[in-house]
Image (cartoon, rainbow, N blue to C red):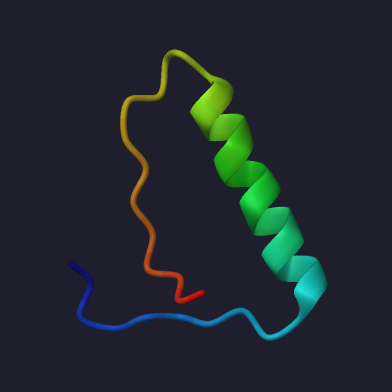
Length: 39
């Protein structure tokens, strides 16, 4: 659990971040991904 969270201000950044997470999820070599982004 992170001590501090980060919030992306614009919708474009949120979309790009979500796309990146989806790409990680599709990659079988990646086991875990953590982030401190607040939705």
